[in-house]
Amino acid sequence: MVADDSQSDQDIADTLRIGKRTLERWKLLPAFKARVAEIVAAYREAVMSEGIADKANRVADLNDRWKRMRQVIVKRAADPKLASVPGGDTGLLVHQVKGIGKGPDFMLVDMYAVDTALLAEMRNTETAAARELGQLIERHDITTRDTGIAESLDSKLAGLAERLRAGGVPAESDSG
Image 1 (cartoon, rainbow, N blue to C red):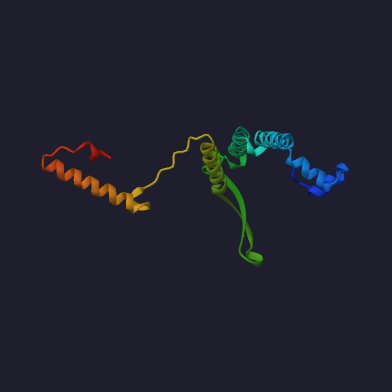
Image 2 (cartoon, rainbow, N blue to C red):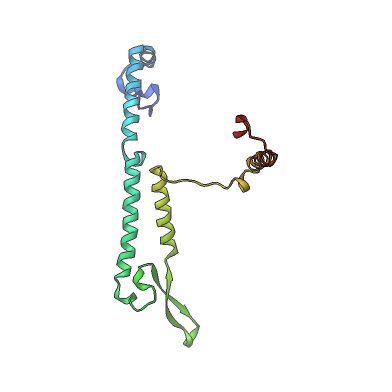
């Protein structure tokens, strides 16, 4: 109960039918402290190996979601109603019905558009999976994001170019 840390000391003492001071004395005992620490560590380990806290579970869930989105694309591509629509056999189109006009001129029109929301979600899922697996390489443009680094590199390169034009050989300390 102490390791669970969801009740006050008084509530724990009442449940155990002991005095609060007795519980407080127990909590000072090295063996009691060690046992509480063991229980807390075991609980943390169990939590980290289950559900979303576990990397393998997160990747499996991302993979499952991606397969389901892919299944939507495959089913759409097989839909005979989309066979005559340009791009309909890709499975990337979504069918929409739009109402246009008013009164007696009102009519429903079939519209087809690329399902950008599904494609964006697939891309986000793929990116999340790559990040989880350590396969995502983030690229940064130092010339626009960190002008200090870019200016420093420009300065070093200019100095190196100057020495090369003068026929000098750069010292080892110049290579960094």
